Length: 335
Image (cartoon, rainbow, N blue to C red; front, side, top):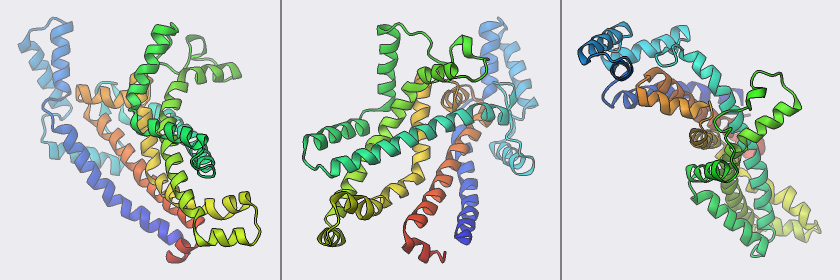
C-alpha cells in the first residue's frame, strides 16, 4: 500500500507541471495585464492624462516583469515555487500570494469539507431509505429532490436566497462571516451561532448538489445489489432484512461513491466558490474572479493550481479508501 501511495504521488508531479503550463497560458491569453488596471485608475481617479498614465503603467510593467515574454514569466513563477516556495507577489493585494492564499484557502476548505460531510451522510442515508422503499411516496419524494439538486444551477439558488434575505426579510449582513460585534472577539458559543447564521446559505446550496448526486447513485447501486444472488442467499439463510442491507448490500453499493470522492472535494470547492461569489464572502471564489478581472495573474494561477491539486489529492484518497473497503483492490496493489 505504501508503494502504491508513493507511485501515485510521484505520478502526480508531472500532471501538476502540465496543469501549471496550461493554467498560466489560459490566464495570460486575454489581452492586457495589471498595468492596464493601473492606467485606468490613474485616469479615472487621479485625473492624469493618458500619456502620464501610460508612462507610469509602462514603468510598472518593467518593474514587475510584466513586459517580459509569457514563457519567461512562467519560468520565473514556477522556479520561485520550486526553489523558494515563493508563489509570486500580488499586485492588487500588495502582499505575497502565499499570504493571500493563506488567508482565504483554509476557510474555503473548511466550508467545502463541512458541505462534503453533510452531503455524504445525508445523501447515502436518503439513498438507502429510497432504495429499501422502492416506488413508495418516500422514494418519489426523494427522487424529486435529487432531480432538483442535480439540475437547478447553484448560482441561481444563491440569487434566490439573496433576494429573499435582502428584500423579503431585510437582512443586510451579507458578505461577511461575522457580525461587526463578533469580528475580533474570541471564540464563544454566541460567535459560533453568529458564524452559522452567516454561512448557512453557502453550506446549504453547496451541500444540496452533492447530496442529490450521492442519493441518486446510492439508490441505483443499492437496488442492483439487492437483486444480486449473494443477497438472496443471505436472505435464505434467515438473516433479517436490515442485516442483509447493512452488512452485505450497502458495503458493495458504496464502491462507486468511494470512487466519487476523487472529484468530490473540487466539486464542493466549486459549489462553495459559486455561492461565495454571489454572497461576496472573503473566500477563494471572489479572489479568483477579482484577480482575473484586473490581471493579477499570480493570484489567479496559484488559486487554480490549488484547485487542481485538490483534484489529484482527492483521487489518491479515493484509491486508498477503495483499497480499505475492498480486499480485492488490496490484493491487486500487493498490500
